[in-house]
Amino acid sequence: MQKFINHTNHPAAKWSIEQTSAAQSYGEIVDVPFPAINPRATSEEIAALVKANAEKILELGACVVLCQGEFNYTFAMVERLKASGIKVLAATTERIVTTELLPDGSSKNTSTFRFVQFRDY
Image (cartoon, rainbow, N blue to C red; front, side, top):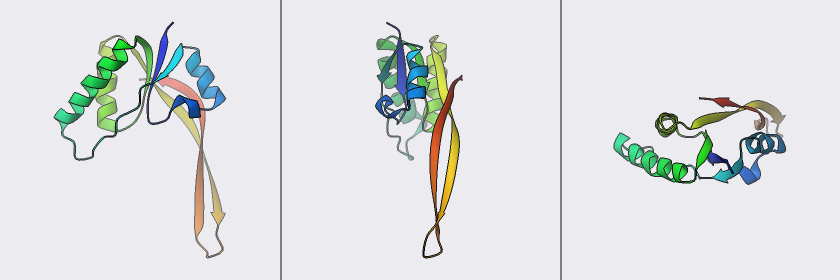
């Protein structure tokens, strides 16, 4: 069976029905958690993380990878996976913001993100 690898900070178990269905159209969903990236990490440290995780993703037999997170790591991972012939996607969402006026005069914003589609890198 083909595998859809979710390489993000958002476990597939918490996705909407729409996003889950769209991912399953590619294959079985497998979470490969996105690493915590130290903002002080060097380019070499990022490259080492990309190499280790790319190897894991390729060993799983990925046909498609959803990859989103820290920008430098994501860019390097997308390049590496595409060079290996793997289709790489980003999820697009609609952001809906509601604002609540609080009794003390301050306001509270709540953002809801609604899945729209996957888009190729």
